[in-house]
Image (tube, rainbow, N blue to C red; front, side):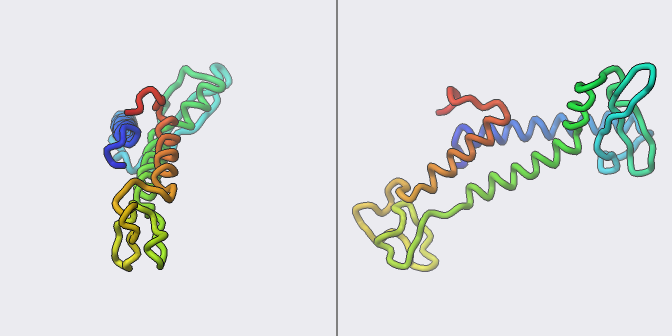
Length: 165
């Protein structure tokens, strides 16, 4: 599944989002008198009576700066929701979820005759014992479940089924 087009797409999307988020934090650090990216918190929406809502950021020392001073209303809320710290947190969580999905094992039971044809982990001697199926494609549903879940994750990043290889 590592070479599946949706996995490749998802990894590229994660890398690009991480790159942009880190660059935004670096730029923001310069605005906050050289704050390190680890010192910058989540963005938040503030209000000025004359101009309405806008987006601000703060570091751990309480230094603040405007991030997007000209946007108001739902634009400000949306921008603050997708601040770099939140993006990095979501990318890290999705990477862990992707690794967890790929680590899911095929069905293995004590009687190897009933194990999945793709079961290859012989730590317990539970590999498929049916010579007619052994080494064949997954017949326990694991591969279809993992692929469907990976595609769902990738769709959140713009994956379209036409891209499927």
